[in-house]
Length: 210
Image 1 (cartoon, rainbow, N blue to C red):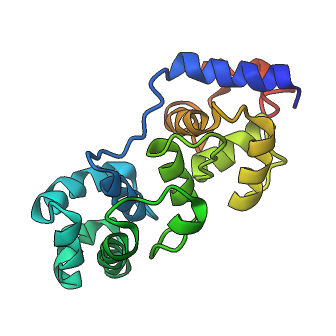
Image 2 (cartoon, rainbow, N blue to C red; image 1 turned 180 degrees about the vertical axis):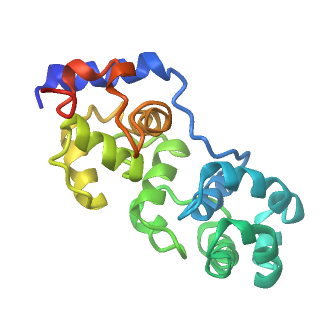
Image 3 (cartoon, helix red, strand yellow; image 1 turned 30 degrees about the vertical axis):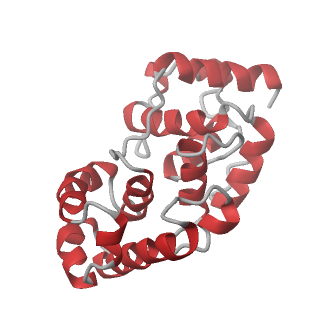
């Protein structure tokens, strides 16, 4: 896609969703890390319903590190895969304290060492917590809409989508762009239907062209 078209899409989404905020609610850096882990195969809305009580019961990393996995599981049961997720949260808290001084790492390599953390989560943390330029969070909305727009070749492989978008997007815009795709994917360009009649990106969208 031509650079001018890419920038038009970036600016169009920016006009629609100026705040570009992550929809997961958190106060501490590690809380975002944990919330993203819980969001796997689960909606952000559900995670936001679960985390207030979870973070009240375990208010510090130390509390999480000392927690019984079974008790953590009771708080996150409705998020699905609660046994694996609760184990990952406890082990992750222990590792953050033992190896990273209680801080969320700021490199992809270190983030991927944490239990249950993949590239999607790591990229989100790098972008939202550490303001790292050039990150791409290739979630389902990003994969679907970037393919429809023609920013990617339509691949469903998250790694390939990330690689292709890194080449297309201005590095300083990429993290917020991905947040905006999530918002656009919920409001307009849904999985069930691309509502082109209500979309301002139609002039630059491959899917919308006859």
